[in-house]
Length: 619
Ligand code: ADP
Image 1 (cartoon, rainbow, N blue to C red):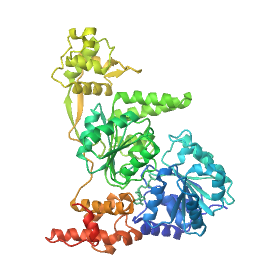
Image 2 (tube, helix red, strand yellow):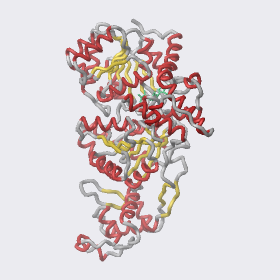
Image 3 (cartoon, rainbow, N blue to C red):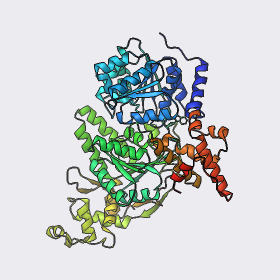
Image 4 (cartoon, rainbow, N blue to C red):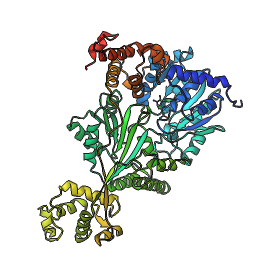
């Protein structure tokens, strides 16, 4: 069968479904083309950045096509959430995974056969079992949507061997369905692998814009990271955020630090048990904890829409990883901050991780190249958004975005030439044979046994920074390393070495300036009173239904609600993110809350539609 373009009225219907079920006014860039391609029966590879809205592009075709859409997704732990989200919108979806009893599986299959289900979510592992394959082959499948399709490629960053089963499985189906492959990774090798290994036939490859205008990027170099995280998190207590760290140990330490200061924090890394991770993920998704500290093991498939900031405590290994992780903020379209804290030690950590995890020399070389691009990103003075977009080959990236750390004028500059000279001079006198910690102790004038034994208490630089706190000296050293005035050697005990730039400073020919952040960045979430009240109402409803709050309404919808204050059902359904199903389910409750607020302002108070609810909410 030759794929045909879909009739015009299919696209009109697609838009109608976007209104009715998802409550969105218009398609985002690229979505319509993908839907159109799939409805025309054409194999399609869609490359969209994280958070740009891939799911809608196979969910809507699923509703319009006869038969069933199979969604293959790598994350068993999130399948329930994904399906819950669809149920919240009134979409007929189920999942099959190993958490179900045989009876539950039979019941679900029966519902599918009766045509009562349009979307079936599966983990690829199910296709490894013969009876799993047989069971699914007997269903009338019209579309297979492969989510996170880059998992099929060993060049991708999340290779998953069971993804290799998908291609042969589809080939063996009695009637070959159309295939949609979805990913945020656009490198050539990965694209080639997806097409070949999934067996896509003359696919239409659609790459949508990589820009996420509501994400504001910044890089801070040589910052005291712990201090920064503490003050940032405390200044943004109400907001959900993710902090990515490179190692499990770092995750544990940071979590402890934040918990010790009363922050509602949880953690996630591969060293925890399945149950611990599941619990932790749920606490975060359900807004019981506001901060998630995690390694890169966390996040794939997470559709928590109200993440207001992502802080990278360490530099990640590639732009792909960075963009994917940072992209987990601001899915609701509201402003979000993506902050990368760079220290020179991060480069060594990542090099070590690459050496350990990638053996093949050609691949290792590639990984090191990617790492260098990240290092360059951390040092550029140009617009950060432009850097990112150019990396993803977006041709018309503007030179200035006015929103990233390099475009926003949020810095004060401080002349630190004299301090730098003291530090360089001390490193020189210690014969460039020691690390940052001991150098800082010597500058501070600490009286330790080691310093005496080495005779450093006799150096002219001993104690010349006595007035500065020890941590402050270490921070300055880190800054000078991050700015390439010095570098740290590799190995277990990195040693400080002066770079040629430092000599010019020592000779008084160049000055050193440090950019200081004027005030801690504040996540751009407004906390109007009504918005807060609506958020509390949402939390209570979510607890009752045992679903994550953002599945009821996103922050963006609540904020719009708080600003527009719809007075009736007609106005309520006009809000972005309110479809017919949610209007029926929640309209009355939220309208009552909005109405009550209005009357409160007029000096009286009216009961909520649901009085038990009111009692449950603590104002
Ligand atoms: P991705 O899979 O590309 O990372 P999702 O499919 O999870 O992204 O979508 C990200 C967010 O954008 C979701 O909250 C989704 O509901 C929302 N979204 C998708 N399409 C639209 C649209 N046309 N208008 C408004 N919001 C949308």
